[in-house]
Image 1 (cartoon, each protein chain N blue to C red):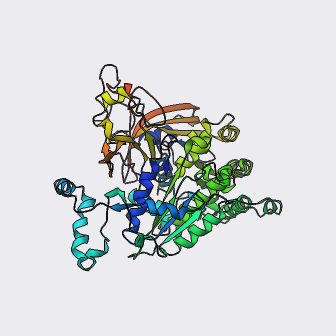
Image 2: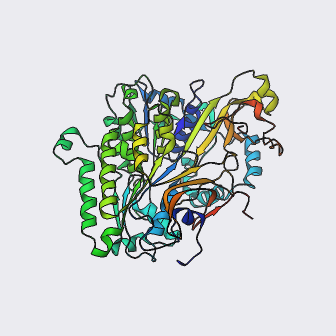
Image 3: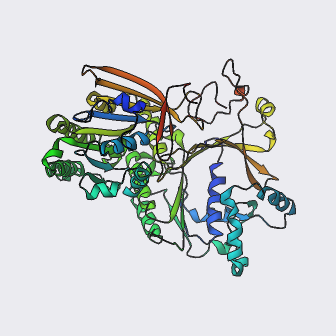
Length: 303
Length: 261
């Protein structure tokens, strides 16, 4: 789940990446939004970044040397899929925001769109999700196809659903249950400021992975002094929770706050933000005046 | 492996001082956590301790609203407990509640509502146990906030269900161990539901983050409030314990601040 920021639609950057990533790999997609015609949004999905961009390619080669283990499996996929070089099935993480995704990726039956604007209850959305997920049963052993569900701004005020707190929670619980037996993943974005604090916490507990995005004010001189590359930053991404399925061990990340930058206004780049060293005597951080806290509680040590 | 040194959680709960009767017998244990620090591991630890070979008469009835059996099975295997084998031995009963539907009013009036029938199933399961095990049943719930979702927000139904389960602790000596998320209720103006639940509780285990946030070697802190704690000499008093913890795949380390090398 992604907690939206009312000040800026940065959650859309993440959602677009998620949707394009699946489509370029021929993974079916179910997209739901409060728009009257959600299909129109597909035209704004970004295209994978071109290999002609040599600078980024060289940069990638250098970066690949330091790739974490999971990304190194990328080379095994490219070796095994020689006959699919032109079908763009390679896993892609770089997208060019100025170039729209080619129409053939989403014009077929692969994409199902649902409008939740006029839905009197979540039943329609639930049924569409159930039908969609039935295509990807999880049997022990291999799987041939994976599906992606993208639900934008669930409980947005323009939807009748926004008044149905318990129905929506029930829907999310049911969706989670269906996903546990399907080869699929779902992203739900929602505006936390429109929920009561109690229900916001319920949603947060429901999430397997919980992220939040936050806008950065323009021309903030204080922030400009604290953050390198401030002028390229459009917002922050916070990681609040990582999924713990089949394990009791919490994942402790090296960094939980990332800056969202737009390189050349085309490419999204996430960069770790490291907290300034803690003053041993007072326990306060040198960098606390920036007010960049992404945690739910504010405190002297929040970054 | 079972004859191991007591850890701080065992000591706080009085689990090492006696095995018969089981120290948690007839008691209600509430595990509270928050988004920042999950308390699920405490539930898994208690599940493992309850099914340990030192207490062969113990039986667990597990109401799973959060995860399927495979999730708990994999975790408990790493902790040295085989849930599938225990189920075959009649010591572990798993109730998959992932799809428990919200009971509607009509069903409630006919007595066929989801929670009513669930309670009857639990009671019948306990009644069907061997005579030696009837008084050693433990009901575990993961987790209570999802029971409210299943009840479509009808906290009264959940409260009634908990009261019914509470009668089993007093009449049959069952234990009731449940997990809930404290931060959902602290932000409410009138958390009546939680106050009524806490009135029933004998042992409260709270997991919280450290003030300094997450760290690789310390995952949080535990506070155990044990009302009616029975010590080695047999006298009863209230006991409060606070210590840190680190969760690993096959165990959990508990330690006082500053004592970890």
